[in-house]
Amino acid sequence: TGDMSSLQKMDVHVPDLDLNDHSIVLFDGVCNLCHGFVKFVIPRDPKRQYKFASLQSSIGQALLDRHKLPNDLSTLVLIEPNDIAYTRSSAALRVISNLGVPWNLVYPMLCLPPFIRDFGYDLVASNRYNLFGKKDSCLFGPEFKDIFLKDSDFSKVT
Image (tube, rainbow, N blue to C red; front, side, top):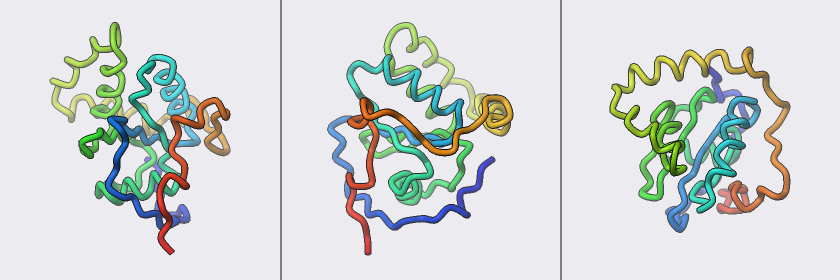
């Protein structure tokens, strides 16, 4: 697992979210597997129902704090428009199942108890850097600027 407590945190005020029915996906911004997941979702999300931010970003940190979630790089986080947050396999399966046919066929997997689903998720998550490598920073091109949340999207606390 990746502990983010050593990362410098910038105070960001996250106002009541008005995301116009968008969900937010928080991901490990340096993980190649996580980048691959985001790159998988984007072209399969023609309705642009998802906005993205790295867990390491100020926005990611503020959203984790808001939802009282641990600073853990090994989890994917989904925050739905109703402001309910999901982590680990629940987040991944919910994101994938909302991408339409044939991806919605994974939805029944949510009926499995989380401890079973998360066992596999945690096994991959704890070995993701060794298996897939990592980047120095979170890099996505300017063509993705509208679907990634920026610190300027929220007001900074001084």
